Amino acid sequence: MNGRDARKGRDMESEEQKPSARFKQTALLLSCYSALLGTGITLWISRSHGSPGLLAWNPVYRTYFLVPALFASFPLVLALFIALVRGLFFRGTSEGRACRFFRALQFALACASSGLLMLACGMLIAGTNRVGGYEQPHLLTTPAPPHPLDRIALSSDPHFGSPKRKAEATERILDSIGKGGYDAFVCLGDMAETGFPGSYLEEAATAFAQGLGGTPAATLMGNHDAIVGGAGRYKSIFSRDRYWRADSGKVHLIALDLSWGTEEFDGEQKRWLEETLCSIPREELVIVLTHCFFYSSGYVDAHTGKNWFDHPDMIETVSPILEEAGVDLVASGHNHYMEFLEHGKTAYAVIGAMGGKPDPEPEYESPQSRWFRAREFGFLDIARGDGFYDLTFRDVSGNALWSTRRGY
Image (cartoon, rainbow, N blue to C red):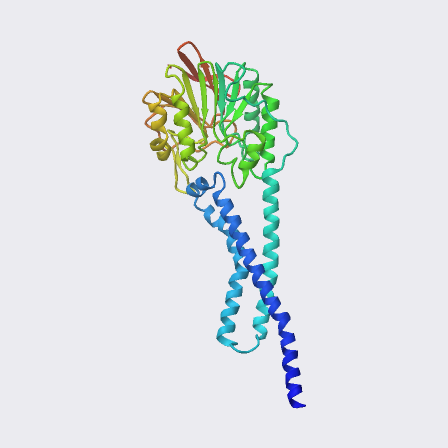
């Protein structure tokens, strides 16, 4: 009788432990899932288009990018803590009340973090792929536009969505270009303050379509456009090509994917650039377009301590390829100035003046600078002639600020 009672007691204890064991397994699996999901999101964000440059130029974002992984790993860390406590204080016995409390807390946190991270994944997917109602601009056809490119307008960095942008300046620039008889307009990036979730990019597309009055337009993706999955939205609205060329007669536009600097200048893009340049006769006009500047006057960023002038990586890595190939003009944005510079036989222009918040007065003047204007909005006018081109910086109303003529 006593033996049967003892076996019955052990059986009852075993039955009581089964749910506890299943609960512990479920909590552990959920904790592992949460940690993997958080780590996956962190890796995706940190490796998405534009993020390597963001992390290099704004190191503070490294902490922000680690938040999903750290948050998601906490339940797993708690599980390890419980295992350690149980091994030290409750070995060979049933779990104490404190262990059971922390196990329940682990399960609750694993459920919460997994749910929140899945919601974040859904928002990222929806935000980077959602197509809303917007009017798309008449995009410049590449590689062979059905019209001349003898007179084009360039500007950059309107930053739609920024509370500090000058919307009126952007509108007046688009109106001046739309009424100016230009063959094409190219925005060199940073159409949006942030490319995610995409509404600012749609706003820019609508403004271009309405303000340009049918003038064909093309764009480059800037560093702000690409922020946290914005590249997907950019490609669905403007262009799926990271880099492209447009040729018309003796005029050749070559657009590169250089948003922060050389972070995206991989072997594939380098080969494409070299092959493209080799295919163009030296006596024809070649204009290279990028978002990030090469030579530029500028300042030291107060928050990061980074130098926002003469970009060493761009100058050392990409400039030699362009200059050796005889590129006539390299036009960029990124710095919110208007500036004309020369290095050797190649001209450089900075035209980040389409409405984004003006950058500070420069602390550094580039030795290559020939003309500079800060705190004024406008665009760059390039008009081709027979063996020469006129390059004119204009204000928001189309009035000439400075001009030069160069041969090609």
